[in-house]
Amino acid sequence: MVQKTPPPQSTAQPTTPARHFSVQLSPTRRGARLARLLAAEQLRDWGLPLDPARIVIAELANNAVQHGRVPGRDFLLVVRDLGGVLRIEVSDTRGDRMPRPQLASPDAESGYGLALVQACTTAWGVTEGPSPRKTVWAEIAVG
Image (cartoon, rainbow, N blue to C red; front, top):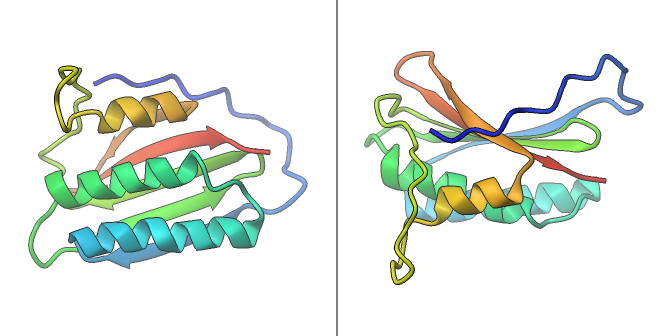
């Protein structure tokens, strides 16, 4: 797995409290679309730019639906505004299927999702557990 090293943690206290948004959605194409639309509305309410966050949310939610789906078990989207950093987390119940960025062939119609996430973020990775869950997270500098 390719993982960018997260930036060092700051010991300074943020001037504004952290804000968060979370929603649990069905592991369907409609659920992935709702994740993107609801998060975009929340970003607008917070006065934050929509892109590249909307792209990252769409890719991570789509991956949860395509590769992390277990019938009857929802996926969870969490978006946190940490004051200068937007953290996006998508959790699903297929901890046995870890994401692996792959280089897609130039004529491929799919396989670019995690490469796109990597290009749009300052850091991203995967946190395992609690079993059977995994969380794919990404951080974007904002402001």
